[in-house]
Image 1 (tube, rainbow, N blue to C red):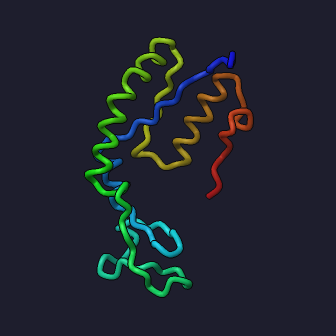
Image 2 (tube, rainbow, N blue to C red; image 1 turned 135 degrees about the vertical axis):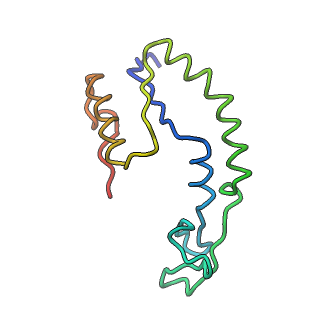
Length: 130
């Protein structure tokens, strides 16, 4: 399309951290509310939304640890040449995706955007709503 790429952002998160985060995710099949195991009483594992009356939570097939690991393996194989390409072009910016809160990660992204001479509004990367 003839557009110039200013940067490529690589969000770095340990694979096992991703497996833990995703495999702890459960969903209400009725209302779609998402829960993490740590935020739900494991004995009940029921939706607390008023319209659901304690509907049992389920784990989506995509959120099971084995599935997540397989997806991460495919991602690692396909990601490496892309990361290398943008690194060689001097366009790759890496951001630590764990050990920081979302505001800290966003501040790093804002810095990269500013260094590229763009505004957050131009990139569609405005501060997320909390």
